[in-house]
Figure (cartoon, rainbow, N blue to C red):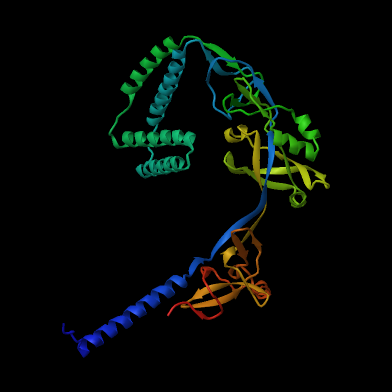
Length: 411
């Protein structure tokens, strides 16, 4: 069989295509083997602190009682001695009556307030509706369900007032009359359940939310660092069949254990900021009361005093705490981007198509980030005293192979 000869033109085309394919393959290979990821430098504040285990101890009185309990006050609400805080239902139907009655009274109150417009400008009402809606969406997004209910009420109030102001609804008399009639019917069905009363004045916390300790505060005060550590390992909480608790004072203490190094930092400050991750996230001011050291076992016991009371705080018992000691401000760069060149700490910054080495002087750092001085916030003398060269909005190279000063990042 006669072989077909390839002409010179076809041969030239094949050679060109082969060269182009090899070039593309080479560029793809270089691209995959020279991946440079960057992160923009921003101004930030980082908190220095540590986490520790301990227990929140409140001066409290237990509310005795059992059965099918319905609560008439909210967690964290202040009550006087002898005030009714709940009721005991003999029939489960009474609980449903109380729930419906609360709903009816909220609706009646909402309609009564809705008619109180007092010449409020429409732009103000519109702003109130928008603010209430944003608060509602934010509470929904963060899972704060109690705030969702409050946000819903605020939005409905603003929307109703808008209807009154624009003439869409003259008043809500007919709706209120129907609700009030239904309220009287439900009150008759509820009857007179036995009441539960506060044994002392203070802040209420329901039995289903309260945490009970198997030791008193004197025991916590007298415990050595090792004893408190063992108590925490064994668990200081117990179950209780109570209606709830009355916290009798807004002053409460937190007893915890930490390392000696952490205790050294703690003792340098008389006041700190604390929070309880997953329980009471909002920062709370606290005062250092005492530190008791155990040098042999490298542990210390500390006591913090706090004067803040809220529904989330009253639900605390044995709980991990986060203690903020100091805060530092500056420019934030990723810790993974740091290199040491000629005994100088620094990072590589993407400058056009080049990698430029920039020195840094860490102000504070943790496992993820480093704070360096922000020269734009300094006077001339301060700026001259620091050798840090990173600027706001620099693109710091976090990942890349074979970096060196003035390296061409791509061709």
